[in-house]
Image (cartoon, rainbow, N blue to C red; front, side):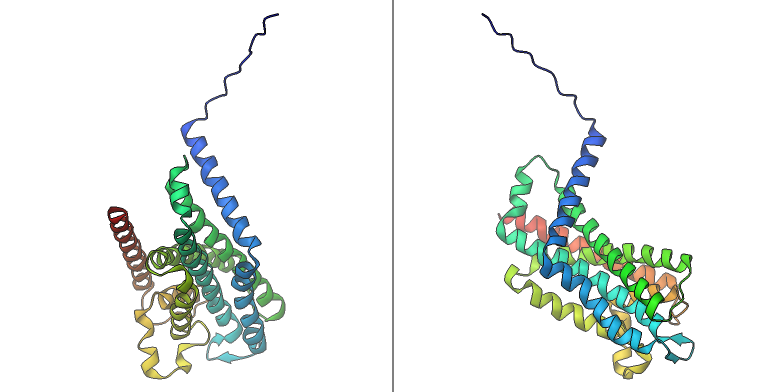
Length: 267
């Protein structure tokens, strides 16, 4: 008895819908990977939260002029947390994957390379939003901080902007530093920049020569934009801070593109 093979043609996915599905799945798996990596998720979320509980809540009744210290530290540690998520999630994570040949494997698959990079950037944004949400909750419940819905929405918007800016720095670091040295090098860059930019305490409490260094750092310009949400910004115009962040991001992306292409040509 003859057997008739019955085949059913699979519907072809439309280009845009298929691409969107790839980007969404890659982002989802990247987020779950980092969330399940306890050494990353606990430290990235835990450190800014722990520091804010120790120093922000302890100063819930303190003021410096018109600055409510607990509210100031909310903005500072929000920046500290989102920068850490971007630099460690991308700078350290991507460096390890490049050393392991994971990017070459991804590029050999049908997945478009931009989906891989987009997933890492979107995951950094997601962790930044989680950190800021937790900090804002703690600040309003235990720190005596009052946040309007508009202020909270602006904080989330600035978190997205800051995560994208420092994701670009993470890409550059991943291309430059060896995987086994990446955590130490990121810390050597991340922690001094955070301190010198006034993320941990108002710059007015620092020596004058340290205050003069702050405007040269991208972390400072991000923090001033975050502080401006509460009316705590410095005398510089907001346009200056935006221009500095934009220039920093374009510089990081440009250098990353040049180094990546040079490595491709030498491969």
